[in-house]
Image (cartoon, rainbow, N blue to C red; front, side, top):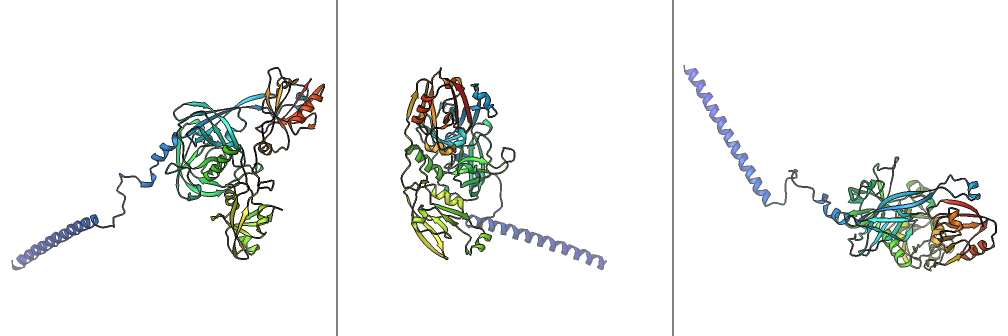
Length: 482
């Protein structure tokens, strides 16, 4: 009995001890949690777990989207195309070429309340009619103020006032990883907004090299598809930082990356088109090469930054300022330059006659040089838009016009006169020639201006063979009798 009682007593005491220890532990835990909770209210240190119910602070794009949607327009175009497979022998017999109407669409960004709209050159190139639809469904016919194929920028205008518009941001301050919105009209789906980040800067070799492009694109993974061209790339403040232009794709649709013209280039081009009617393009007069590790080793270059000066243009800006072959350009006006595309981007912001500070590394030492930029013709004079010189050839019912030098350069031709107007019973109309056609030769005789065209037409009797090109790049031949 003593053993049994003793065992029961020990078991009872053990249970009491266990209960007491458990109660003491729970009391300690409650007290500790209470102290931590009170401490967290008065401390700068907080638990980092996500509780749900609240969005990330920097991921709210509603304000930027609202500002952008009303300032981005839908652009539709109509153009007349000539069948490229048309038989030239049929043309010589006076048979008109086959033509067809082509529809196109894209986007544009209102940049002023009085109706100026920036878009891509390729959106409006060759268009006979441009229609702009606002976000509120109002529709207007637009006129082209000017274009710049080298940057793929075009400026059009509608007759309206007090329009919502986007303010320019600063593309120099854009950082890789920054959130952006692409706003436009892909596949005619009006007022579409997509989000992504800036995935790279200074991209080049995107536009056809035959167009002498000025490229330093912003690359983004925001979804851009056909119809987005000319639309807005905006930051989270709703500021315009780029014009969406191109995508890299195997099938013509979005596959991960798109490219936008930096707004600092757009701003300069638009300013020139408004003020001069043409772009004032400056050149530094160098042939430059990107630097990589292999190139640096071969040329004894210590730093992998900047753009290497391979050659100088004789009498050009760089040569006159003292820049030498073998120099490495590292900055323009204190803006770092680490590639050929970045150098082009910086110079594209200036006009002939402007002076810029250029930082170069020569013999491992930094040298500052002041360069007076020149035009392609190696002058500091600004380019004047060609005056519209018109003259008529009454017997043919045609009015002819001088062609702007920029248009000649764009079409890769050196001469020609444009057909500005045709009467209903014009011989040229009967042959199938359309207004806007640029005549480059008449009966194999090269035509350089309106006077030469008048003389050639007046001297012709019998058959006439006209060669030329349309503004969209379509070449054509027409033959008819007088």
